[in-house]
Image 1: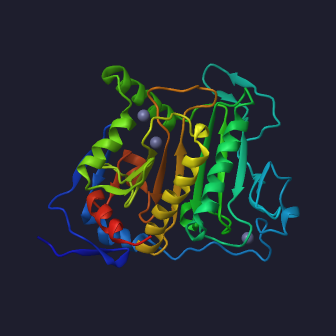
Image 2: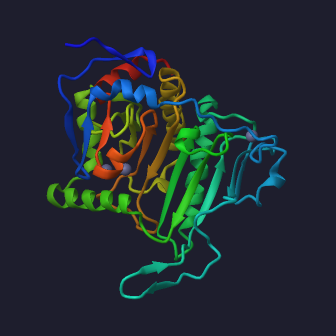
Length: 345
Ligand SMILES: [Zn+2]
Ligand SMILES: [Zn+2]
Ligand SMILES: [Zn+2]
């Protein structure tokens, strides 16, 4: 057996697997390669890219004139905003176009109708969501809930994704802590695959996949990271990225916008602990998180269950992944979970 290899930070030492493994994500039938052979390569890929700070940050309190008018502001008891939602200045989709589709029998297309919103996560120039108090995270989650509810009103729109890019390598172009809503006229393929697979699972087992999943992981324990009365956090068996996490409510709920105020408060706490473990344990790595929830106006679905996927971006995605569809995870999730459990949030 080879010696342990440090991964990303010297204190995180990974035991090499005897041979690479192919692991199947049970829900979407996606296979991942877990190969500790890639450990040293994964280390080389992490470069010191940083986001260039601007002279004046458009997201800081006092610079509100640098953004469009707010779509939502959540205030503190002194009437100062704590979370602010504004239209994205460089949207990939537009709300002010007429939905129009075309086809010439070979080339199909339609106008890219949609909305892109930015959630400014705090008024002060803080770059990391993990450094904010839990109540602030609760307000950010509350802003997601309100904007998801507002998105139901436009019948042209079918799906709202909430995502966060933290750090330049994860795609952030401004360093002030923020996340985004992308509201689209179609359900994205990646979400539709999950929805279809969850439906098939429900049809053949009469049970929600996700309701069973957290119980299985809780029982196994090896990939479990955090546990609270309402939420479970674990590292998926076939996680695509080192230290990939899944956060989900224990009680069945298909749409995030139905979350109660109490659950939102608890989730703020849980999310903060999870992000702080990443920040402290892995030297503040870049990461994305993505909220997967049921499509707009879908009602309560018995087979789908919202969840938050946290994807640390320590390893690169290149030709191997794009070409084959296989992600290579150099760190077995069981070892990553054991390490992160030992890190104090
Ligand atoms: Zn700022
Ligand atoms: Zn469920
Ligand atoms: Zn998902």
